[in-house]
Length: 224
Image (tube, rainbow, N blue to C red; front, side):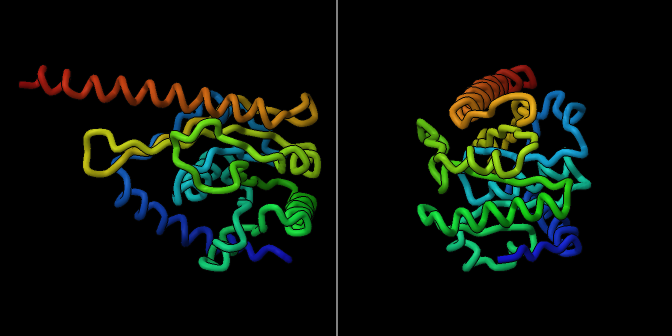
């Protein structure tokens, strides 16, 4: 299995994706903190995220464009989904079959090959292994993350919380919030710690959105 990533196709798709996001969402909000100034531009990045919608891989594409615009980006996803949407391979999708050790190992080794050949790249990974309701708790991260980090060492790992909320408009809004960067050459990176931080980021996002909903009626009353 070899990747079919196409930089030209990615540039064309980025334009199309912008149109789709504008038509599908009231707003897409990136809450990145100081992370843009902290990433090492010469070390690969692994984005680790919860998986709550069909849009998630595309949200990570947009995040990668903001944080590591010069990197090629790859995403681990189900082989069954790639069979339905083969064009995603040109966007860097690498397929695997969950619970099939041979398939998982083959996909992880392909990412290691890409890491060695490209040097600077980013990878999107959803350790839940499938789309689950965004209120699902615990998130239930699977164990594949630990060997992947070891294979890709040294690497920077960024936890990402994704959330979609209807709010007060016909179209929903989306939030993408990043957590603390972890570097595999400086600390041991544990799946449980990443899951806990993403849960905390989701709680913060939920509180912010609740406050925004409360501010809406107040602002309307003041404008009358």
